Length: 600
Image (cartoon, rainbow, N blue to C red; front, side, top):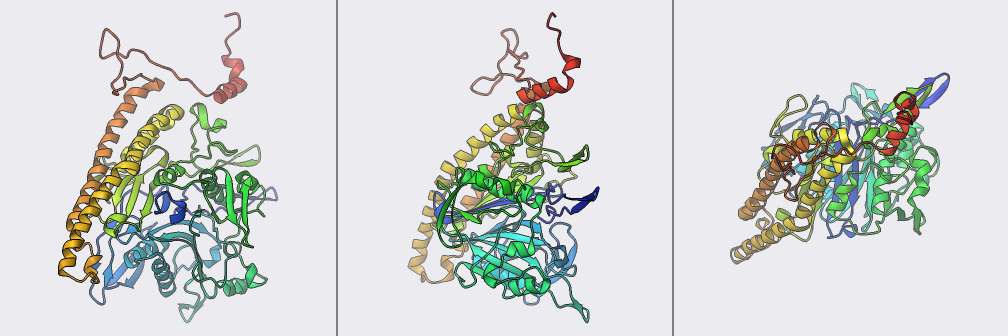
């Protein structure tokens, strides 16, 4: 996100240039799973919209028809600054969050890039490009066209950006940046973008996290790679690139790395790959050779120790990826790696895998950095988009939607043909400065912030309940809903075939399938609201169970065990204490004050 831009500048300290780069906490993460890499042939895209300034709610726009000459006002997604107007199209599609009724998915991460390429007069920002493209595109390739046309016509008002763009058949990674400003006769003759888009090979996965990812790309393979005609020529003119076209790297030209953009950004993409490949990156090199390498062979790069390094854009997972596996990737804190956030004293006495901002600190003349993992406390909303070509659009698209920190929150299924948004996700139901007792964002914040005080004790308890809900929904309940909805759909089709030609638009329109739409809408709303109510009860349970650092035991049915004399007094109280690392550190730093004499 723009709020999550990674702009940390070179800082001169005692005549030494220190890279304080972009480990800003306001950053996002995407993982893309192609059809051939998923368990059920779905195309999957995960997205965490992370920002200290973003409230978690579900954006919803109904399909609509517009009169000729209608204008659409454009407001910057991050700041709400008015940018101007653009011409509206005759018809716009329904959008639910970052998906539309045709199962197109668009998500993003912002990488900033070269600041001189910002167009301060640009008329459309990256967020508007996402949601307008969703309203106008039936396929991923159409969405790419819409984004390019809008940015070139009205001028691009944001920084360098990576988009995940997918539909029910294929997925793409697209990177773009503006061309800066060259004002002649009051007009910016540089208006527009340079860009490149690559299709994720079937069977492969991709990840990006606020650092440009596309390096060299094929110049004559339009089925798999699209790009601006001047993407190389413009880089030459600006002095960003010298050499033959075949050696051109988009990310090296337009988003040079520094310590922060690697350690705070590429490290997250690496970690997603590490999880989904079981630590072995299988990919095709530039010569087309199949290669498999140990994920740890890239550690010197992702930890910022060798900025000349790199890691693959696409890799092939060791096992097929399901919605649940992808959701769990978004809960990562580098566990089990050298960057594991639970393994240093910064995690406190209860292995907290978070560090409050700022991301860097100074001590004794040196600068240190806290890790920025995929899961983070300042997530506004997060999601897994699921697009499926083996069921009709009215049933096929599911937006698995959640709010706040992914590690302690759940994803609820939202069918993209829904005609209603659950109240707990509704836009305007609370904001960052106004609490709402009926808002998913606020109840998840209450639970996550409760867990932060005793993380290694409380978070696993919450996670078990998250896993139970998600596994039930992702592996059982939505399958039943799908089956029933498809039966209902086919019954309508049979009736329509008797009356109408199967070639008409009526066969793909949702209007004849009102009962199907109502069915999946009811399921969407009821499931979200029931789980929200369960989470309200969970927050109360956490307070009772873990109050004051105690842990009160429970019966299998969830009731609390009580003494034989009173139902109001716990049977016992457990004191889990602190991690061994915390004990060791306290003993070393303060032991001479608190040590108990041996002869006591």
